[in-house]
Amino acid sequence: MGVEYTMLGQSDIKVSRIGLGAWQFSQAWGVTEYEAAKKVIARALELGVNLIDTAIVYGRGMSETFIGRALKELGVKRDEVVIATKIPEEMLSYDDVFKATKRSLERLQTDYIDLMQVHWPPCWHNIPTCEYMRALERLLNLGLIRSIGLSDHPIALVEEARSCLARADVDVLQVRFNPVELEAEKTFIPYAEENDMSVLAWSPLAKGAVLGKYTIEEAEKLQDVRAGEPLFRPENYRQILEVADIIKEVASKLGKTPAQVALNWLISYSDVVIPIPGAKTPQQVEDNVGAMGWRLPKEDWLRIYEAARRVKITRVTY
Image (cartoon, rainbow, N blue to C red; front, side, top):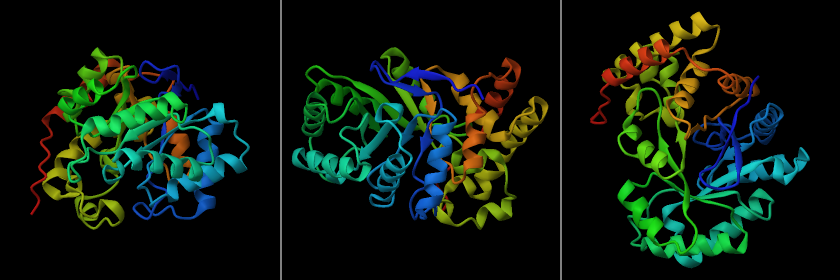
């Protein structure tokens, strides 16, 4: 498998073009057995995936704990893995940024975090943007983190956040982006391209919707985190299946899997896009890694894009 690498924003941090998202190591997705998580992490590293993206809120520390323990037990050298985590909005007061980072370091069993991201803006807690950004820059200067990212921040707030930094800059924007949810192409991706930032694409397979594995009836009955997901409501999922059918057709023609085609579509979209799909099993890791080392024929890429542009997702489902 031909793993590709790129640099994270303007930093000197080299990451695989497809990372491993770690939200699944939580009650939300059901991988709550440590040994199962360890096997996924081990296979990702074995195949050359070096970027692992987690967050404090994933399992209320469970994901970070699993990652730290697995890296220690697997004997992974610290410079062989890039750890990205996130501080949630309620923990963004100046002092809490330090406290949250210290606890993340303890759970991850490491001396530094490669990429520390603000998970969401603290809209409910009235914390000024410059308060948490200056705390993050202090952590950067101390060597406790190596780079700064913003997850799910509108561009106006990204601009404000950048203005708070004295010497550092924001290296990463993390946003939802997949072949049926294209909103990020309106502002986020052009902004990242213009400012030499990386875009970590979360939910790159639309929680599995773009793979077309379920009938409309089955999709409505899904449990776990997808139970209330608008993508799986009939009025949306019916449209998504049209894109999924094209992805399956292209996959069959190229001898690839639907997941590989969907992920390759994303890394072909722009060189700043780094998908971070989750994986519940080592086999899913292998599938994701197989999306690198090749490129979709232009006519197939465009076919998927044209179908994706016709999808109009509504979130007014009740």
